Image (tube, rainbow, N blue to C red; front, side, top):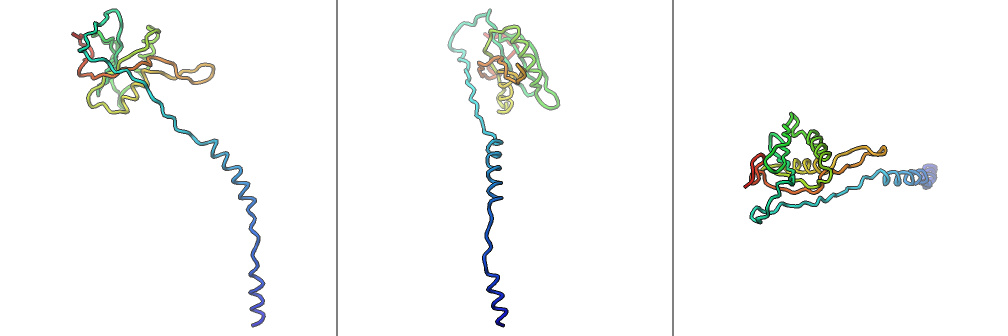
Amino acid sequence: MDRVRKRRHKHTEAAELDVTPFMNLMIVLVPVLLLSMVFTHTTVIDLNFPASDASGAPIDPEAVHLEVAVFDDKLVVADGRGGVIKTVPTTDAGHDFAELTLVMQELKRRMPEKEDITVLLEKDTDYQTLVSVMDRVRSYPTVQALEVVQAELFPVISLGDVAVAAVGEKRS
């Protein structure tokens, strides 16, 4: 019995804990995780809402007022005086935003000084469609000096209701 008690006392010695490998791992892991972290960027888009028709301001027939009307089954690009420039039908995947971008690029080539455009929406247009249309008429990605940058199209965006200002009809 004496031997058993002595043996128990021998094994009660505490072993020394070596935390150096764990500390080395943390020294490497923390900066790597901090460098790979993605920060959320919130972008605010300034909008100019169109004035009401009751203002009585005369419409200059020489000026072109670009409009993009968003319908469930198509996007209509018009000149604001009743002329339809291009109708972009939807595809199986939804609205054809790539085609809208090409139309906006062509309009910008023809009118480089023009900066404003009006986006007309149906009553039940969802928010994501609105944001996608606004992104496509505001800018498009292009490559300059081996970098992808956003080239400006029509950054001054006004919103309106497609039922009030029907695209393709003359305004009174």
